[in-house]
Image (tube, rainbow, N blue to C red; front, top):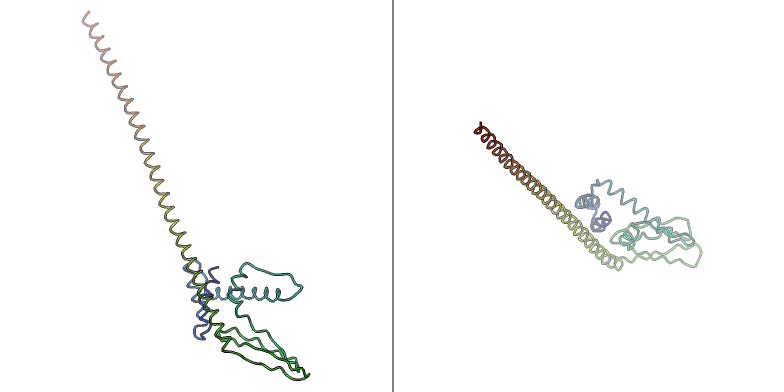
Length: 223
């Protein structure tokens, strides 16, 4: 799907606050190369809708006892979002306060939660940024290269189809011209044959007239 490939190729823009909102414009412009017209709002709504469906599948499939849910673009979306899923919300032992989900970012924090065995003690959060950031950067770069390769393949395929269409049109035109020439040649040949027959008929009539005139002159001389 060109939309997802373009999203993956431009995903780096999400790491820059000033470029974050420009990703939808970049995707919309990229779709024009595939003869697909979508506004920036339509692009954003479509991506959000697909991401929501992807999360529903992930949440359902992670719960035991439920049937597996899948949809057409799951595998491609899993390549994009599967590497940096939202951190799982945790809650403290001493209260029912739920920690908010951590946003997906390039500098995603790896949260290790260890709970004290003594009732009433709160959880200890240990944050390890540098190691996860390095690993995430490597994986993200690989995904970007893969998306670019997919776009190149799709562009080559579209170029092949365009060239094939041009070749087919030229072939059809040559065939049509050949048919027209054959029709014209046949008409000329037919006309030539008709003219030859008419010429023969004229010669026969001429001879008959000459014979008739000769006979009339002979009879006139006898008188």
